[in-house]
Image (cartoon, rainbow, N blue to C red; front, top):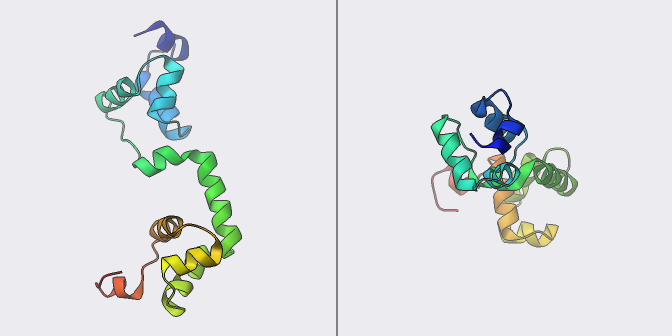
Length: 131
């Protein structure tokens, strides 16, 4: 174990230490590696060695602060119940992602991402058809 790791993790429990940084503090393997003076690949190898599960790529790159900002944006655009608002626009008003994006001044991909994260499906998707 390197001196840097010993300085951060004096009890030697690297598994708990990495789990705290990665899961509790929502740091990426790149951020952890930078703090410890090792490569992100080394951090990922340690995590695999200790059986620590990794987040989805999108979750790992967003980070907690950005996730909170995205949630605030979502609520500022769609109100207190963004899932209901997106479902209404998609299925009752029969708007496409592009039309919702134009109305809200966000990109198609942002609208698609919000709908995916909230579990909003088009009626056609609910019936098993194409989007």
